[in-house]
Length: 430
Figure 1: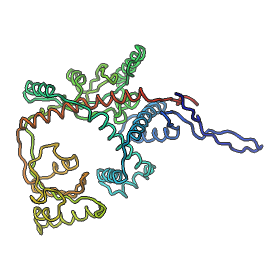
Figure 2: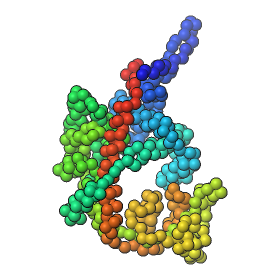
Figure 3: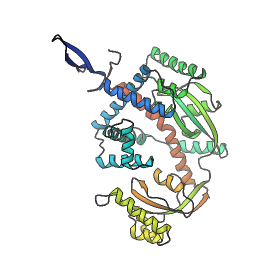
């Protein structure tokens, strides 16, 4: 079904002789279902991408290449946002406020300081805040449509653990970057060959010395394209099997051949490799205690942080006992135990909490730590190395298999969504 939407926004400017000249103010560069993307929006996205790439030290692709890349990303984002809204996913103001605050804290700034940095970089705060809201929507959509539907059978877990035993506790961790060229479902042989040729061009340029980050920004259709296609450090168990098989044959600095997946054609670059403890090997456990102050209508974030800072000062000065303060001040169910938790494994707590306690020495008390539950003071009591129980080993194996499947499943879901939604590209119209 066609969508009849104006192609451009025009303005009439008076001329000296009284005639009028028509000047193009803006134009539509894409139609996605019933919504449009304008050239102004695309231009802003390209400028933001260029700033991001410069900060990373990545060589910029040609402007027209980056325009096409960003337009395709905007089409996918808009299609996902439409689906999120149409299926009832909502994000309230408080959730956005908390996410914005966490971003500022992760950059070790107050919200006011972070806002000034954005303004210095000519990024309107309200526009950035809207992007945060949209990222939360996209994350929730992915969780519902992809992550929550991934199934791992007991047989898969058994085979995974058998592979671990065969490697005798040894595992490999890879630092990988990749380029993805999507292939539509039921693509014609010509379309498949065109995708393969594009991937081959990436390989040729990479082997010719081109910067892989620029190639990812220029050619990749994956969500991590502007991060140089970087997947970071991944154990072989947490990579798609096709990736792990190819990487096992490569040396650091090498570029793969074309690797096929359900999403399309991939090109891999092995940045580095190192040994890693296999899933199920002995891990470090931590015994700790904490004080939680929840944020509510009656307790603001600033008040929660202030109260915990005062409690920490009393603990550090020796004027108060952590356990006693936890019993009287903490909003957590552990308050009756003096804030003490059971021995925790890596992954048992939310990431913000784990990062905070992992960096503490035994006996140290953290600064106030923000998590989705509120603000915490954390004190580490003891650490030990412990073997995983059979139940825990199966849990770790199941999680590793879920991660192995997740990225590939997400790329496949994006491909299907892109094929299903009505899209009309008009970038080449001038």
